Amino acid sequence: MTEVRLQQWGDDGLETLRRANTPEMTAFLGGPESEQALVERHARYLRLWREGGARMFRIVTPDHPEGVGSIGTWPDGHHGSGAFETGWAVEAAHQGRGIATAALLAVLDDARATHGAVDVYAYPRVENAASNAICRKAGFVLVGEEPFEYPKGTWARSSVWVHRAEDTGAGA
Ligand SMILES: CC(C)(COP(=O)(O)OP(=O)(O)OC[C@H]1O[C@@H](n2cnc3c(N)ncnc32)[C@H](O)[C@@H]1OP(=O)(O)O)[C@@H](O)C(=O)NCCC(=O)NCCS
Image (cartoon, rainbow, N blue to C red; front, top):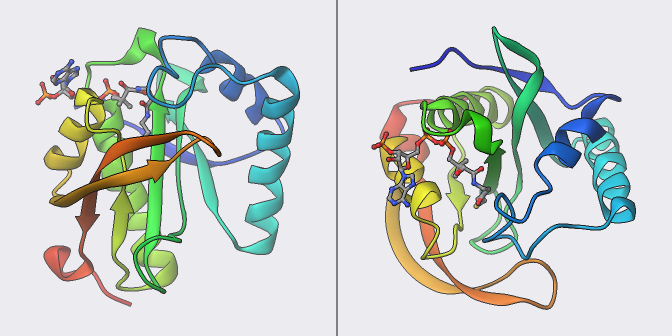
């Protein structure tokens, strides 16, 4: 598996968002966003780190310190208080090498190290085969399917995956 490291979202993260903003990469995420929306997303990621609301990271590899994608966790608004949600993207040129799976395992470690023994949910669209595959590979359990709103105003059927703290033995 490719060696990956998670780097706290920084001032230079906007380029990472721009590189992932292609029709191919956003096919299951509502399509490319406007430049203004990317600038706001970048500012939000920086602000949420400061406020302790979300922990977004750039995924870096030894050969690509500029980053190959993004991943993070934030409080989950769907399945009870205390749970977290995760989401991710790995640039098309770097896919198929286990990078997303390794990043997902790393972000789970970060969530448990930061918040203690929390459950972490993921909601990839049911037809998003690669994202469903990485959930399974990272040890998430499929607990259902439900309509999910993303982006705002767009509803799609999504898998409900959960990675339970007790599955890992991780704790506070
Ligand atoms: C989902 C995504 C992050 C995967 O990144 P990646 O680095 O290629 O992931 P990995 O290499 O760790 O694993 C991909 C797995 O998906 C599988 N896969 C890929 N495409 C597939 C397909 N069409 N059907 C079934 N499995 C597929 C691969 O075979 C691999 O599993 P394997 O190792 O058992 O063979 C990447 O495709 C992506 O960024 N997509 C766009 C963003 C997105 O949709 N994010 C979802 C937010 S919920």
